[in-house]
Image (tube, rainbow, N blue to C red; front, side):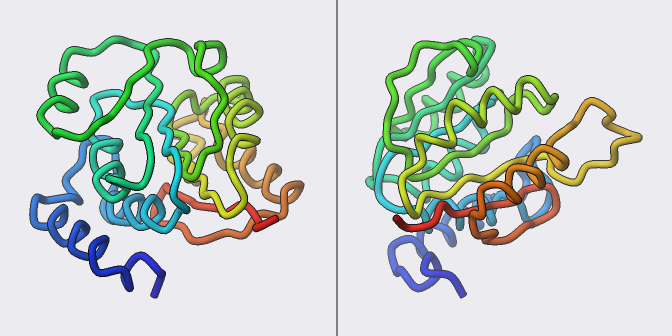
Length: 189
């Protein structure tokens, strides 16, 4: 059992989210929302960043698990009214930056948590990884979405191959995988 489940306040947060139907989040598969919240809560105190916010469902859920533990920031390519309505309704202090994650102006920060769910094609994913993974602090956690998708159904998805190659080079600890979400932790200094 992870540290997340042993922390009373965070355990209560997860139970509250589950009672609201956390596993019914558009864009995430069964079990992934709970896993995402667990990984976000297990990460050290500090900034959490999501690439590919879309309508805001995932950032709201993992952001709830990190509330009071650091800034919550999202990067989204398009300005979507539904995203803003969802984030406003959540009441969470979430900052959204609109633009291409590879080039958008955002000051470098020490990240505690990073959720990459943006461009799943080779060029876009590599650009996100090159830019943001070095920002993760020791003990920081990165979660990749759409890992192990069927290449026949999604031929443009390069997440699996790129993440496997990166993992061999990086030596980061694999924390787990639920369906198409896989998490790694940066080694402590």
